[in-house]
Image (tube, rainbow, N blue to C red; front, side, top):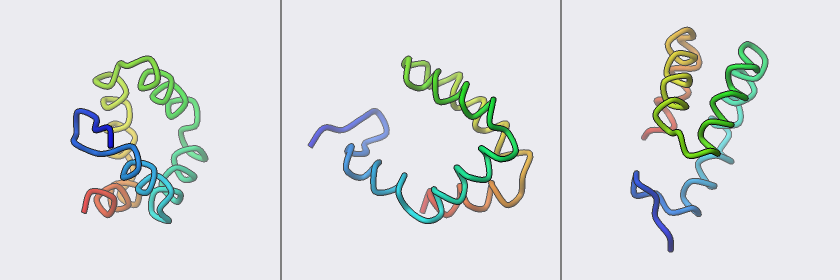
Amino acid sequence: MEKNSQNFSMEEAMKMANSPAAQQLIAMLRNTNGDQLQKAMALASAGDMKSASQIINGLLSGSPQAKKLAEELGR
């Protein structure tokens, strides 16, 4: 199984991304900050994880509910 720099396999990453908490978080961010989320996704796809993370962290810090969902995903 291939691992990325955070030691997640692609299978583990997909399982996390498809979880109810992740889907709720994505929907919330799309509804409130769709343009910024798209930009972060494009940067991540291009390999610029640092910039993508900075945008996502900014989005999460602006919403207590989004931050809580992200913390659930980190467990």
